[in-house]
Structure formats: C-alpha cells, structure tokens
Length: 113
Length: 110
Image 1 (cartoon, one colour):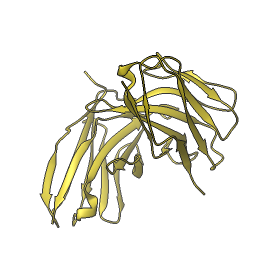
Image 2 (spheres, each protein chain N blue to C red):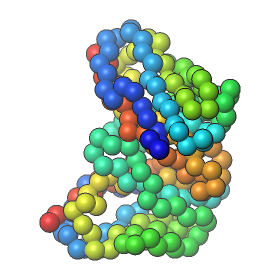
Image 3 (tube, rainbow over the protein chains, first blue to last red):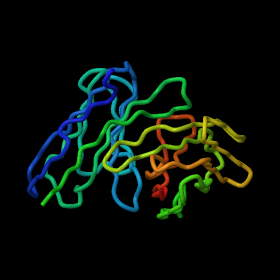
Image 4 (cartoon, chains in turn purple, brown):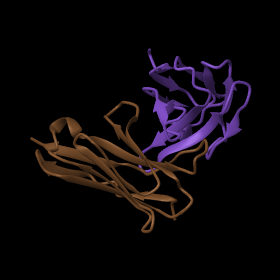
C-alpha cells in the first residue's frame, strides 16, 4: 500500500498561472481532504469530499476548486494563482472506525511568485 | 480566540527527559482528541487518539484528556533525538472536520 500520494512534490508558479494538485489514496477510504499549512496558522481545511461525487467547502476555499474524480482521486485546482497561495498543501483521507482520524500524504510545496 | 490553542515553542530538552506537550480548547462539544507528529518537510502522522476524557498509553507516549478543564496533554518518556519534530494536536466533534492546533516544535538534545 502506498497510502496517500501527492504530485507534484514542489512547484513554482507565476501569479495568474493555473495548476492542479493531484492526490490519490489506495486504502478504499470514502472521505478525502485538502489542507494548506502556513507558519503560525496550523493546518486549515480548504475542501473535503465525504464520498465520490460530493464536495464541500472548508475554512479557506476561496481561490480553489476541487474534483473528486473517483473514490481514489481528489484533485485541487488553482485557476489563477496568487502569492497568498504560497503554502504547503496536504491531502488526507479519513480512517473509518478510528475516531475520525485522518491519514496524510507527503505534501506539495507551492511557491507563487 | 482560536478554538484550539497550542504553545508553538520551540521546546528543547535533553535526551532522556520527560516531555509534556499541551493544548487547550474552547468548545466543549469536541469528542475525539488526537496527536500528530510531523517531521520537517513531511506530512503529519498520527501518534494517538482518544475519545472523551481519560488516559491512553502507547509505549513511551501517553495522551491525557481533561474535558472539565478543556485541556489535553501528550507526555513522552525517555525522549530520544528521533522524537525531534513538530507535534500537532487535533480534535473533532465526531464528524468530517478536524480542528488543529498550530503545533509545538520539539528538539531533543543528545
């Protein structure tokens, strides 16, 4: 089992460019999440998907869109990147029957110039 | 006021010491309480989770929850240099969303 995988590991964008962050899990989990992590701010939820075909906004959804392509894959899209979106992005999936805990991927470091 | 408060540190202790990491929270409806460890440039990994009040032990790690005081703790006994990391507390209402503390950076000095 690879767990939760994310691509790319690192990306540099110019302001106004678009990109899609990819996430996949092989644990057959229903729920998947996208977070961003910034110094002093902790992990903040951007969007989540409770099941295939559904998505919901989290705490900081502005400037992002998501797609739950199938049960395995959950992508995050930045349509017009801004310097404020420079961050480390983590994808996670929820482990059923373990206190709503979540299993995280290795992260994507994004720098927007 | 943030829902979950965590001292960011940094905290440095000598190898072999007992480490105490803490979080306070404001919403008494939180039900599940977790501790994650995050090494530099890695994703968070779950250490322990507890439901409601009480203690839970796993090897050198002990998690405590005091719901009456809205206070949770993680104790690390016989600390090792490999324990050097950022520790994040998290909690939820038994639904989809986790609320995280900002993390405490811990360094164990050999």
